Image 1 (cartoon, rainbow, N blue to C red):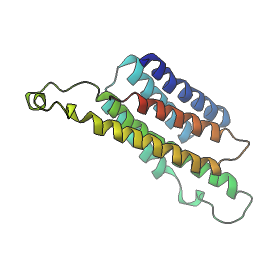
Image 2 (spheres, one colour; image 1 turned 120 degrees about the vertical axis):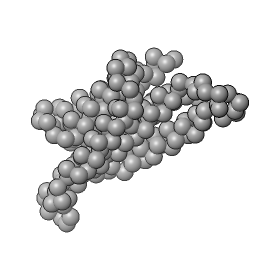
Image 3 (cartoon, one colour; image 1 turned 90 degrees about the vertical axis):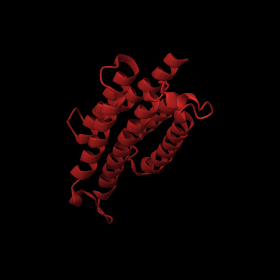
Amino acid sequence: MSDLLHAGALVPAVLGTAVLVREHRLLPTPEVVASVLMLVAMADAMLWHIVAPVYWSAALIAGALGLVVGRRRGEIVRGRSSAAPAARAHVALTAHVALGLVVMAALLVAAGSAVPAASAVDSHCHPCRGGTEGVRLMALVLSAGYVLVTAWCTRSARHESGGRLHSWMMAVSAVAMAAMTPA
């Protein structure tokens, strides 16, 4: 079952990243770089275990901050110009990817909390099991919120772009990651 959940998280992330790369014609845009970073962090946390999830989480948070800070003020278009829908779609994509980085950072830490604590302090507290119920609840709430934000962001995406597919693939991946958090 665990392998199925891992595939259920990685396959949509790979498809979503591929759509984004294809859409941006292999240009190193910040959203593509962030999506690839998220994919590599997920793959390492699930398959290779080279870098600790907390370090990946720090990198993902830094990437999210970089996306938001890197957004130039003049790129947000208001009004009814012909460039406004494309600019709004790009802003929605940037916001969605940045939020996805934050959600994935939290989910990586939550998935890493499956290792039981063996301290003497925790040994007497059988019902709390190291607080994993709270971690699982946080993961589920974050992924549900991310699905709602995805629905809102995809309204801004252009129909001819792959932005919608990318957003929904990342949301599916987040939900699969939340399902892997310890019970």
